[in-house]
Picture 1 (cartoon, helix red, strand yellow):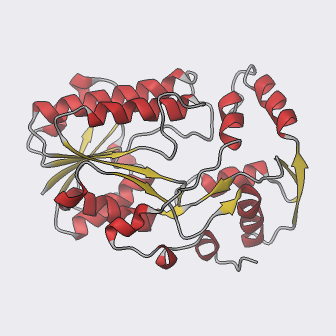
Picture 2 (tube, rainbow, N blue to C red; picture 1 turned 120 degrees about the vertical axis):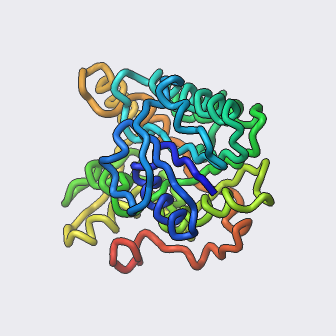
Length: 297
């Protein structure tokens, strides 16, 4: 198959592109700077901005399937403000759907997020929910993925947590009790590839998590243990964290704001792990501790 991976030079995209090449597909990566990615040999590249339809439309010619991975991080306030979530997630999805329909693409695999909801509490979650609606209303054979945090080499989850939790005494909002169900990038990539190949997944929305639930404090302890650093978690009242981030949002260049505070009040776990739809036993997936090379108590 001819597969276009939109956002394919990023963290998830490079791993997925390698998986697709290994399966014998012809892969084209579309991104603003596709040649900056560590892509496998044989992958074609196409430079374009998903917010500009005319800039990307030509990449869809002759494609059998498209994967949309472009996303802003929910961990940081985007440059340009929270409205950038709608410009990228919603506007990008609208352009990708329109271009795919124009060129007769059969399949669209869309990467969303757990909790995606047009009425959600953060701009990130609302924009993801509105983008899902665009995908579902399209004429394409679509598959939607809602993963928890994806981790691995090049991912930002562990590094972000370490920034929040310095060695020694680490004050974490709410004591770091926010819960996640992280999945390794090399574990989710084959599922994305299966969704491209197998018609049985068409019209499905999959909530995907890793083998275990961990708290933000767990991640901080594991990350510091991997670096040989001592750490003690100091609970920071959520209300105080909210005040601090609300003030920080007003400071030019400050990387976090009210939406990040709201995110920390929401668990990021699945009710039922849909990895089973791909013949995967959650217990077989990589844990964060295994990835970091440490033992978890």
